[in-house]
Image (tube, rainbow, N blue to C red):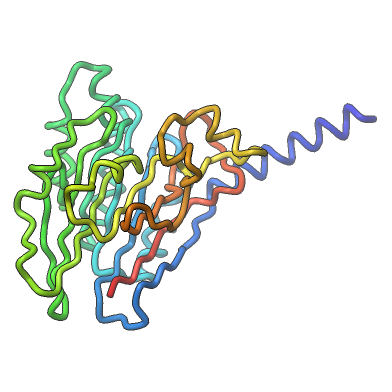
Length: 269
């Protein structure tokens, strides 16, 4: 009898964990009561080989949000064979909204395995209509405010170059806001010499599978911010507002538990 109860509980738990990967939540973060500022839809960790959210569902959610821009903070593929699916998904978004993105550790790892650089992948990404901010920046003006979007390569497997990333940032305008986009949250700890207002990242998946005492982080993660308790959501660290996105896809296992995939909808001043 106990065996049946335990087995049934495990099966039901696995079914729910699989179901949770198909959910998609919009999390609204408002830094202004006015809608005059830039509205960002922030996505992360697509991991297209283990994403269970239908493309149509994601696009419809983004249309409901109707952002000015979409920012994506890396991790699209696991292997080279995932590239067509990743490009198809990003193109579907870029056909509707301006998209700016950076690379993640898995994107670099996939190309290191086959002894290829990521330059070809970057070219493919840009052919979708997206703009890859790999140690680069772009300025967007809206209602007399200049928003500098600064993309930095992945901290661990990429070649982050902050001097290059910030080289063309124009801070001469009276009203300007600097938004850094990078995959690994620990990148924040390298930003002390560069003015940053907001930092958007992912990488942790919000834990993906919740375990008591935060074991999912203690066992699998070595990042400093993670060890200090900054694992998901909104925080302020060293004077910088950081949002750690739970991501859309999954790694290792096609399951989630208490970490629903998300679109972060950020309304800036």
